[in-house]
Image (cartoon, rainbow, N blue to C red; front, side, top):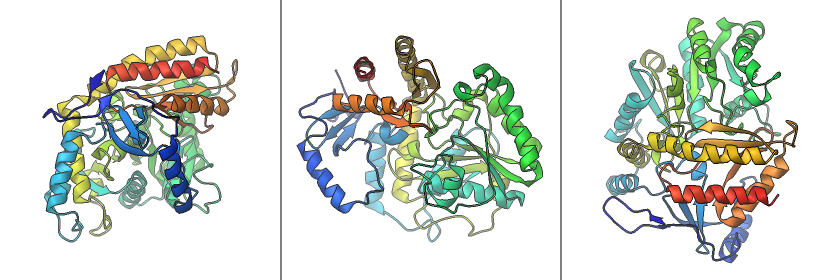
Length: 452
């Protein structure tokens, strides 16, 4: 057993799974009853346990159960929950001031975060950033910037994409239920293209690698017209859509195509960013340099912060006052981001993500060899998924994914589902998780499949 503790040697949470009640236990069930009488029904919960402490690779609930965390709050707490460098900076900032609004009286933290984003995001060109509160806000503003800079309106997105829950980002998001159903009408001038999805490409993975780029660009030419397209937005590895990894070469070709036609190439790295895939950003894997990059989730160690970072001339094309928001770049959130990025660099969390992938992928592939319900194992670094389908076919098996997730939860392992068809199990462990917990979590997953 390893123990998570601060560099100063302060006490931390024991890094072990420990079940003292059923999941959820009586204290969580009591809180759930309060939640149901006070919180809107439309806000969902994957696992109704109420957390009282978290750190390293564990979550501790109100009943004292210690659960292995394979979710990281959906890729948010990559540096670990309550990471020492994050908490110390946040506490110091809270004691100084909590808000002034950067648009009224600025402060250094906002500037420092933008400087760090310029340093770490792909490309060595001159960059500017603007800070916001959420990933959806970042995507909205990236589209605003692209339209303003190009004078064009059309935006191209992809099948299986997820970009948020606001009106514009719902239009960009592909999945109807639960994200879009009966929430329309949606923003216009959005055009959807087929995603380079190897498992589900007509004719199979080999044809996907050979055909996807030509199919996508041919459809843009025929249905939209390159001169009308302000931006192409894509997740380098899709998130909610099922951790879909496009074949090598697709992203570089798409970026080059955009550059050749004056189209802004927007990389939505909200889930993939900040060391999650084994590089600081997923675009780094193939040397792709986006014009604009949207970030959130792992940026600030759990504090609400998001950003658009991009080419200076493009970002600066927007008139003064055209970007911003009351809370965007809140000083406490900025302090969290500086602590999180310091942690990523000091502890080489990109390397740690690669190590997690090296541990997880072989065991998951071995599991897939033994169980025909696993149609695909994919991902990079610590962003890994398995897609489930009826044996001998590609018919999605969402009920099996739900069954496996529930079995894992009951055993004290927090896993998440995703995918357009609800048939994908995704794994996003904190990058600081101990290898013993990681191995134990994989064993619990194997037990869940054995119990089918």
